[in-house]
Image (cartoon, rainbow, N blue to C red; front, side, top):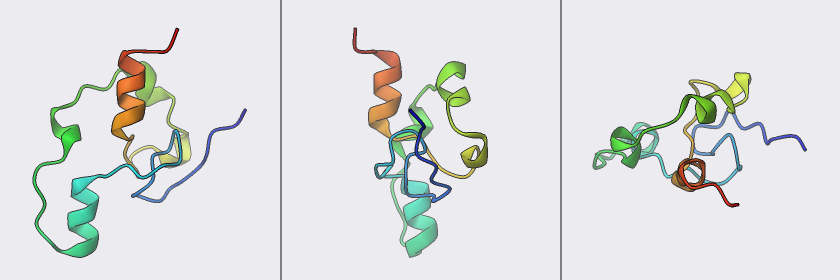
Amino acid sequence: MSMPRSTTPEVCPLCGQGNQCAMEMERSTGQKQPPCWCTQASFSAELLASVPAADQGKTCICAACAARSLHPVQ
């Protein structure tokens, strides 16, 4: 199964859903946003490595994918 490729800053590169990135919302709208949830989150090296190379540094992982990596479904 191939993962979605986004390279769109508003879309999670792992699941293809909106990532709700406050920093991207502020950049795209010009409206001040509260700090993004991700600034307080921890991302494992394994999770970051699962982002397709074309999307690394270009789009944010969503909160749902970040949470799933901490508590994988058994």
